[in-house]
Image 1 (cartoon, rainbow, N blue to C red):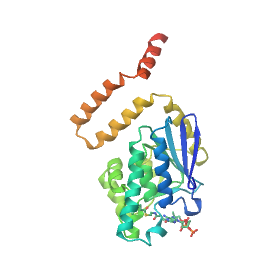
Image 2 (image 1 turned 90 degrees about the horizontal axis):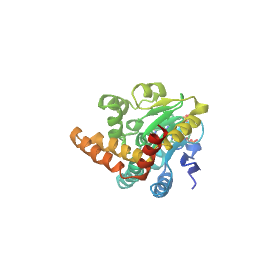
Image 3 (image 1 turned 30 degrees about the horizontal axis):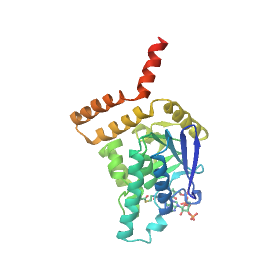
Image 4 (image 1 turned 90 degrees about the vertical axis):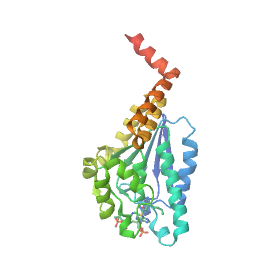
Amino acid sequence: MTYLKVEREEGIVQITINRQDKLNAMNLDVMDEFISLLDILEKDSSRVIIITGDGQKAFSAGADIEYMSSIGPTEAEKYALRGHEVLNRIEKLEKPVIAAVNGYALGGGCELALSCDIRFASPNAQLGQPEVTLGICPGWGGTQRLLRIIGPARAKDLIFSGRKITAEEALSMGLVNKIFPSESLLFETRAYAKAISKNSNFAIGVSKMLVNRGTDANLDTGLKLEIYSWAVCFSTKDREERMRKFVEKK
Ligand code: CO8
């Protein structure tokens, strides 16, 4: 792969967007590489995925503005659909995906982070949806995922103003989960990934699905889905062994 660097260690896969000269802006090639990689990650035995950007400056500065400046509505729709495919598949992956936001996460870069389950950031991170400054609305799910994560009033503020917010402000509105010093962001993210990878990946996958589905379902439907999913967990060997070990220790 040219634009995505993939490193694997003990079930943890770290994906680094590797287009530093353009602040890791995502052109069609980057999206195509994400799709090829997702084809693998959806089936392999990896347990936790980390997404970050190369260098100290950017997670990703978004969709490629140079490319977008040369296209019309037909290509724009294709570009948007490609982005949606990538982000939807990340969101639906049956394993945790963590964004290590190491700098600018703007437009499509912020939207990529929003499709992840957890966002850790360095103090120099700046997040935002500056699309309206370019004459477009967010196009990779920003209006919908931002709304669900930080609520409509805050989402509208960020989208209407196009302003960049600091990691601290993002933390205060629940847009990032935690801030780590720049030099230890990846170390801490990997440590967290390793810790959660020791838990049942089946149970985590089911929990992820329940939280995601529950976001748009009414409470009664969400609770019903939880009951059935909970019961299904009792059919796994993994659950049997984990509970047996606990009981035997006693
Ligand atoms: N696309 C392409 N190139 C970019 C992008 C980008 N999004 N961002 C930065 N670059 C390039 C610059 O052109 C520059 O290239 P070069 O050195 O060849 O001139 C290089 O990266 C370094 O950038 P700067 O010199 O601008 O660095 P600064 O430190 O001065 O500024 C900023 C950093 C503030 C991040 C600035 O680069 C910036 O504002 N970038 C654009 C951020 C932005 O507006 N992002 C949103 C894009 S729109 C979007 O993502 C829509 C998503 C939905 C798409 C739906 C499909 C239709």
